[in-house]
Length: 415
Image (cartoon, rainbow, N blue to C red; front, side, top):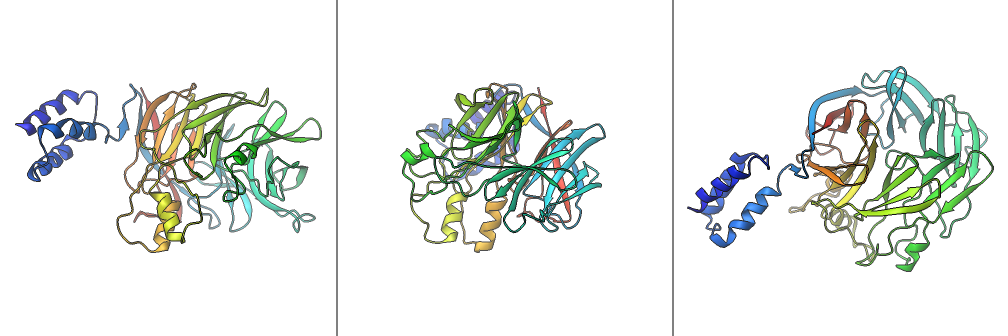
């Protein structure tokens, strides 16, 4: 009787929750055989079924997987480059990547992969004192770059350094800045804005010190000068222990949206006033407990396992074609058997489980999509194009993984 009742309820719910019923029924029958289905278990079973759907139901919005595309790589570039971005021009869409093998930025057509330009990164008079740490194409012929020791510069398509500005001292000593897929540089109101998402002295910092570590800087393009801005992680960031630190960000109009990896809150920074003007909690149903590191881990394996078994957020993107945001999230993945450290590192780099939240312009959740295990690569390689969101299917733990080509699944938001 219980199974019949379950079946009736599921068919009533089918118009609202689209999941494979056959798999559920097999699962329910198995539970019955194991004598776990009793009246008092009925409601929990139904809720487990409802919330295990691939798409969390927030209304009529669904992130739909369309066709897959393959893009050739050039000059032994990685199939999941750590620095990649897409740009639209009169001649079509192009991607720019950093090819660390040849130490050049490369611009190629998308999705054909035809190489259009190699940009050298050898700064002859400065190369002994500078190290390239990232680049963002902001104007049609201008690429803004970051260096170590911390400074921001501009190069042309020949690789010539045409502008440079050192960063001033911040409240807390900053030893590194960078930019790339997750934290690109932004141009707004005559300034270039950059991110510094690391808490520089994690183990020695106190909770109060978190409010001294500034996260955003800018450099003026109209006059000589740079500044750090009063943007910090939440005052409650370490209330439950020393969470790790990093964020991704995206720009819409004059506003920059700061999305921490280890916090549900998103901060909105106004480049007209250089102040945080809004904070909103945007929580995935799949992310609850973040990785807390109160002391040095005993060994690397335990450190990686703690990361994998915790939830977090990742890349944050703005889609100007559809006026929505994408917030990538990584659900926890229990480690239930022994792995070699190399295997654990691969799972940390290319997580087993990945999902995407779709948010409207006010950061309200429209949809939440979860990919199959090992279906997509979780880090960096997300591209917002005219036809949709491109997500790398080159998960490094998948049997189909290859470094010979880039591969993407195209996603479209349906209403």
